[in-house]
Length: 143
Image (cartoon, rainbow, N blue to C red; front, top):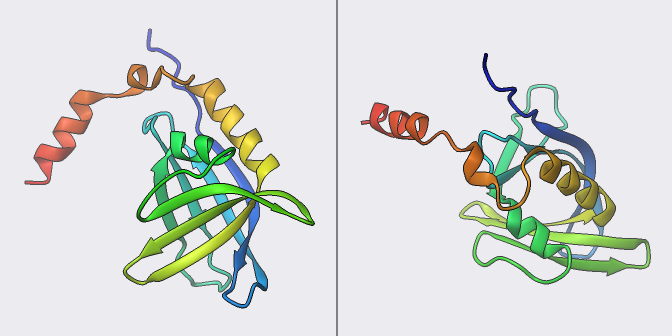
């Protein structure tokens, strides 16, 4: 008998891309958590054009959790609380050689998403979901 594999958590949402002039544009995105990659969360930005490629960013689940209440992260991904007259948001700043982007994410969406991820893989139990042999095989296959 095999163990039941925990399910992936995925939430569709709309983020707001904050432009340099402080205007904000809506961006369709998915928040994704896969128990096979228990330390990471993934944000998939959906292209508006029919043939456009989605863009994916991955970073630590703990970084997102910490960023709900205090500034977190250095370098390519930074997260911090972001209060506006429209309500409580979380700022998600992404940097790459191609440029920088600042997004507003509804705090309530992140809280619900993270709660669901912690039901699937509780905090501190991530190592129980790692398949070290498969990871080593993937690394060795890439030689």
